[in-house]
Image 1 (tube, helix red, strand yellow):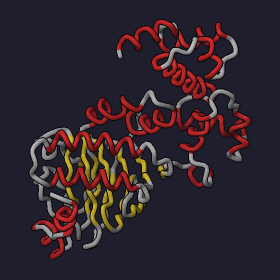
Image 2 (cartoon, helix red, strand yellow; image 1 turned 60 degrees about the vertical axis):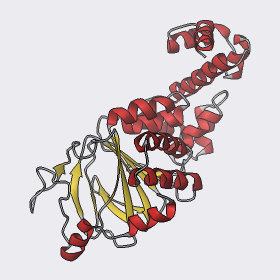
Image 3 (cartoon, helix red, strand yellow; image 1 turned 30 degrees about the horizontal axis):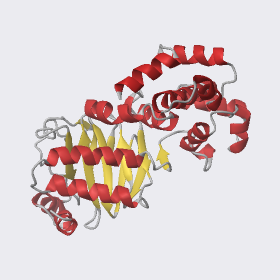
Image 4 (cartoon, helix red, strand yellow; image 1 turned 180 degrees about the vertical axis):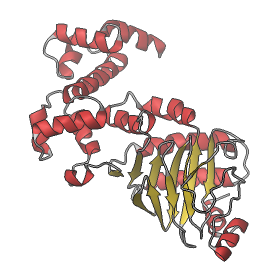
Amino acid sequence: MDHSMLDQYLREINETEAEQLANGENVNDLQFPNWPEDGESYFRMPDTPFFQNGPIHVRKHNRFAPMPPHYHSFIELNYIYSGVCEQQINGETVILREGQVCLLDSEVVHSIEPMGQGDILINIIMKKNTFLSSFLSRFGSRGIVSDFLANAIATNTNHNRYIVFESEQHADLQLFMRHMMCEAFGSRAYAQEMIYNYMMLICTELMRVYTYRTNDEHRQRHSRSDLIQILDYIEKNHQTCTLTELANAFNFNANYLGNLLKKRTGKTFMELVKTQRMIHAAGLLANTEQPVADIAHAVGYQSMGFFYQTFADYYQMTPMAYRNQNQLAE
């Protein structure tokens, strides 16, 4: 299947859509048990229909009828191939535009309003353990921005999180999505392996998309200063950044910003700085021959003793032991 064939396939009205177009009611085409009756609030969607061939399932959302409120144990990534999509996520209205991506945590209650003929939504469904072990584990040690995105989905105990990536201008992401859909809806050999690898590329590309919306109560107060941008500032300036400097850069009161960071990330400002310094130091130890003293200074420490103590507390080994272990592993 090429991109032209994919477009034709996605725009065709399938049997389920024809029925929904005729009566305006959602059809239980996968024979879900416990499908909600009239007046019921929402239902739990089972995993069984989706993972017959592997841990990632790609499907087109059926148009012309509302999808009732539901939740599930798997991670869901919604991609708007064409048109727009209106969803209710935890009671909040979310409008997704063509080319955008919405990443939903497990157990999030959401519903989808009826979609028109030109509105095409792709559901990418992943087992949570696959998402965590295969994707987030590869990004979790890269920096505090990726760490925040990982934790927003992986470890939030309230299970009420979603992230909307405003990715419509990212051409590479659109290309990877189309390639993956050609594998998913085509009949080529090794399709599951290709889908898995395209998902790695897609997740990596999403890490580049820093402009996003979240369902956070403080969002309106932040104006254009997204938390992801604040964390990115810390990443880039971890050697010398102070809370006062950070607050001034984003027009916040320093005490308010410190409390906000703790609430939103689970770490204090100094803990975030230390985390980024340790990540950077570990990378230099594993990938360069720089003396440890130079690395300590490069990441913002003037005291060698304090650097050694901090590194040993963080990684449970000395800097030299870390270097020997990781350079030998390569």
